[in-house]
Image 1 (cartoon, rainbow, N blue to C red):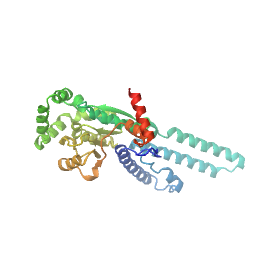
Image 2 (cartoon, rainbow, N blue to C red):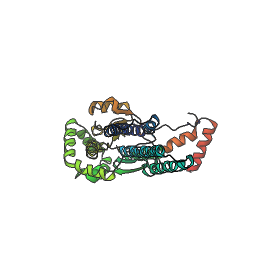
Image 3 (cartoon, rainbow, N blue to C red):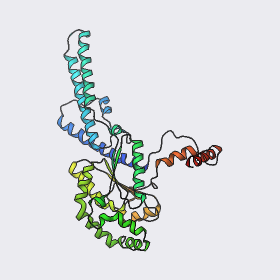
Length: 343
């Protein structure tokens, strides 16, 4: 381990994948908008090379997190082009002296710039990303994973916000909505926990639960997700994958705006079958054992599986950076300082 500071902090796999998926939506939306504009303005001259460069899609991890922002950016570009065309018309019609003709044209350019500034939408790099985490307090690992990922979004996209939504407690009916209290009881009675886990992890019970949850609770879950109005949905709990992924697809179809959903499996050695809903954009796993289970039980294809390890707090990376080589003099002195601070 070295003490050198990297020029750029590596981006967590989930955050990078979110940007990649949304970028694809932005590019597709830009193509569709360009095709519609071509059909409406067949008689208009083609845009110049410089104008085409102005409307290119921004980098994956810096701009354009949702398709709404992309569409607004395209509208702003069209307004800017229209203003520049007005300037060219004024120049062609002007037959006065040079110093008299220059002033109106400068005013027109200034007006065009002002129009572009007023109509330019707020980009996601400026406003951040609105992330909805699906979690539950059945053990500390689910919430800790969500909060560590949320911190990374806030670091990489300043202004990002997040919400924690407990699907089971808020939208499931009894006895499922008492899951938190039941978990505490089962934690104190391991034999009962083992029995319930084994039964619910069977193929037959999985199919029954999947159909039952979708039939009884999907509509309520969809309405709850819409109230949060997120840019992306991330599940960190096994009971919050199969139904929410259906809800996200229906929301996308209803609104015309793609709402991506990802799963972060927070188990290492083994994992319950309810984790592996195949309809998510990507599934992040922490071990080869869980990856094999995802392929065998959930039929999740390789292209959707990402080996990422488990999310940890950003503070661990900060401490590792400051520690450097733990066996060097600087590293040993830093350990002594940390111990003294903790006393």
